[in-house]
Length: 604
Image 1 (cartoon, rainbow, N blue to C red):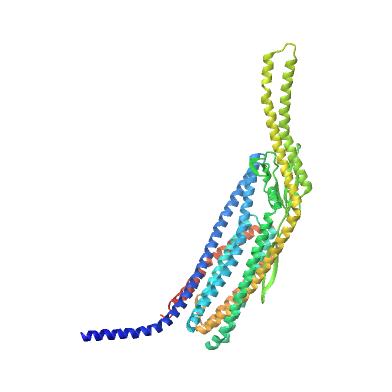
Image 2: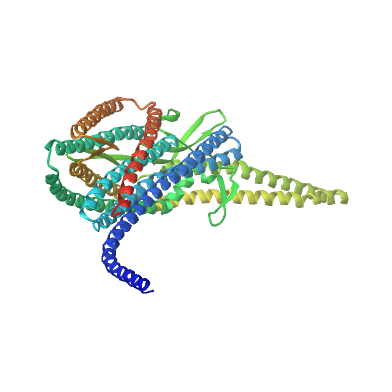
């Protein structure tokens, strides 16, 4: 019994002693685990943000697909309706289809704008999450910081490359949709193709600078300890550049919002809605006393059409899209009259040096202040033509009804004046009068309604003329905001290029410190890494050479067929980029797995 008591006492002593040791170790273990938990939390947030961005891109692509289908469906309906212009129902159908086409075009343009905003916001979010991870990493010991820092940078680089590729595919798909929906004219298409080549040149010039920086680090052949000391300084510089990049992104985000607000101001102008009534055939319907569309077709409406450049053999200024109507006289002579000119918006290109040897080209949209400019003489002619139609139709119908009533009234009067009155005949003649009077009343109501519609159309044009000054001021404000957003994007490029160049140098130094050089998911010796970088530089130089030749060819090409060429090139480029995605996704998965494994293995 004593032995048992003694054993229990000894065990209690051991447990007590061990408990004291465990208390000391627990504080250390807790610190390690808290560091690991913070890192895991930051990584999870980063992964979730990337997944959310991929889902947003997928949603954008689905919405874009639906908008394209809507546009093609409306376009087919419009063309079918135009085949039967003489039919008033077909005219109304054409008006509806044209409105649907415009709505689909607006949706495609909205998606393009939203994609830009989404890309900027996502990059801001990524930088915030990167800062969170780096803060969490500082809680780990020095060895863990060195190991995890290198793995994290490899993962971050891979994830950024994947994100850039996904966003580039989305951007090109929207450009393709804009071309297919007729949102870009031939000159703008040519400029878009040239800008794409300039973007390709800028990206590859930046790649050359980055690979060159990496080669310089490897050729220096520094000892790990020396590289480690330099790495601390270079990482501090990288952190500052990341903050500069975030500031530039935040400013661009604000400029983008201000541009969106300026465009909303444009759309909120009375002038904008009234111009839409003109170009989308909103006059095809009768309106009520408040100017609301009743859904009932206006039979006397004259269809407005549009043409660019030299359509119908009537040359006009190349930057004008004219909305016109036509009248054919009894001899078959047709007269075309312009009612309103839509001065074509311009995508203005700007080029700036964003890094040594790297020139970037961006565009911003500028609208003429005379955007949707009325042709005063054309408006008068259009109103006169519709009035003539009303006179010819409702006016003639009222005149005929009045004549029929008057004729019947005369019959009654003549019967009543006869020396021998035929009462039965008189009563029979009088019995027709109420019906004929109803015909007159109906015809008068139809004429009044048609005249009211003519007056509503006249009011539309009068209001547009009165609102022209406000409209011009709003357009100017939008143009200024659009250019400011363009300039803000240059600032983003400059900050990002400086950051990625420094990041490449840091990655190379980290590889020297770790004694392991991983590039694009593969391990290399120093000589092998230099050779790989030199091949990348050679490839980039070849891409630049071909892009420059493409620019020469595009600048000398005539406008005919340029849209088809652009569509063909975009489809091919999208196919190539999509084929590269699996490899990029694998690099992300591999670098993430290595980082996760190293994080989980801490202090185990």
